[in-house]
Structure formats: structure tokens, C-alpha cells
Length: 305
Image: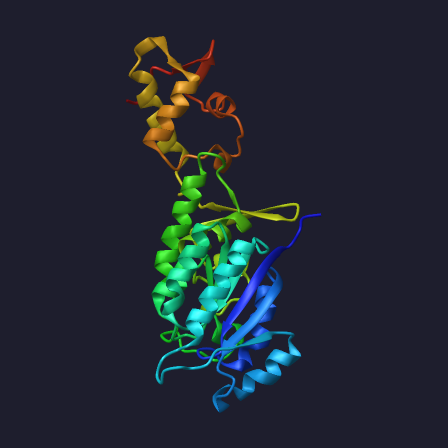
């Protein structure tokens, strides 16, 4: 049985509202278990009164940090020091930093440099540098299913995401023409840490993808495979290209394997499966003006050049 990832949850009470506590812990449970749960603030301040009950009810350890200077956020240094202590203890696989403050950007980068998985959570006011420094970043308003205007969350444009998805599938084409939907989601998250389908009004990644007309899907067992839709190419056009390639070699014919390579260069979107074949040799044999002899493809001389 695969062990769950262990996370240290460090919450900046000065920059995050207590009402999001349950949403934070519920979201983290999708990634692993919280072995450290700490919330930092100056508990002598009345503005943090809401956190006291939340910390008690959810077994979160409150850490007192006095505000020595007016207007300065004293919790930052305490969180950073504790994060580094936990890092060197080597008792966790990742960190969940909950804050809307960009001062934790360098901490997130440092933790990732040490091979730790970093999840950031914050309100929509969170600066971009902090959100992109994390492996994944979640907006608390979205987790709490609050009504948020589309322009309030700095989300990636759909056209940008579509282009990234196509690139990921193309990069995977060296191995397979299709990519597992889970792998696709992981790679997309790697490129855009603050990407979350809930920012676009969806609850599932699969449903989000199905609104892209350029993608096709195939279910194999419990897995969903995603591929880019090939452009429809009429059979006559394919035949004409094949004839032109074969005729460059005169009456000698053209090697079957090399012919397929040349066809794919001329027509990058060519796909045998679109014509109901799994083998290129069988496809060529069933073309009326072509024949195969000793692995060499010949074309009828009457075929138009």
C-alpha cells in the first residue's frame, strides 16, 4: 500500500481569515495528511479572536508572535524559521503555506529546491510571485465556493491553456499518441501552479477538457486517454500524395516503411485508424491503384501524376 504524503500546514493568521479553516484542511486531504498544523499570529490582538476557536476545533497549534513594531507583520519570520526547522527534521514530504503575502515567495522556492512539494493557499489578493513559486496554488474563495467575479482571480486564459494542452500531448507523442488524463493534469499544473478548474466554474478536470473541441477521449478500463483530434483528410488526397512519392523512384517501386515515413512528413495529421486500418501495408493493398511486391510499393502507370 502506497503511503500518503505528509505535509506541514503553516497558516499566517494575519493574512488569512479564520472562516477558511475547514476549506484549507479539506483541500489538503486531497494531497495527503497534515502531520504539523500551526497557525501564527499575535493572539493578544482582538482581530484574531475568530482564529482561537477554529484552532481549538481543528487541532491546530497556535503560535504566539508579538508585534514588536507597529505596521510590521511579525508572523512572517516565525513561520519561516519553523518551516526551515521542519525541513531539516526531514519528517514531511511537503508544505502547505497559507497566506496572501508575497513575503513567502522565497520560502516556497527554497522548500522546492530541497525536493519538497509546496502547496500554497491564499485569498484572491495574493500576489502572482507567491502563487507561481508553489507547485500548486489554491484560491480560498474558490475552495469556499464563494461568488467571485472572473476578473477578481488572476486566472490563465483559456486560449493559453488550450495551446499548453496541445503542446503537452505533442510532446508525449514520441511515446504514445494519447496521454492519460491524470498525467495531463499533472503536467498542466506544473506549468501553471495556480491552475484550478474551479476557477472556471467546473468541479472535474475531465469535464473542463470536454469543452475543448480540439480534443478527443477514449476510456480504457478505469482510465481516460486524451488525444488531439486529427484533421479530416480525404482518401483521394492521400492517394495522390502516395502516387507522387512512389513515382519519384520510377519503376523500381518504393520501400513500404520509407513510404509511410514520407507520407507522414507530407501529411502530418495522417492517421491509419481514421480509415479503419491498423497496418499501413493493409491500407496500401486496398487502394485500387497500388500493389505491394517484396515490400516494395508499385503504382499503376495510368495513375495521374
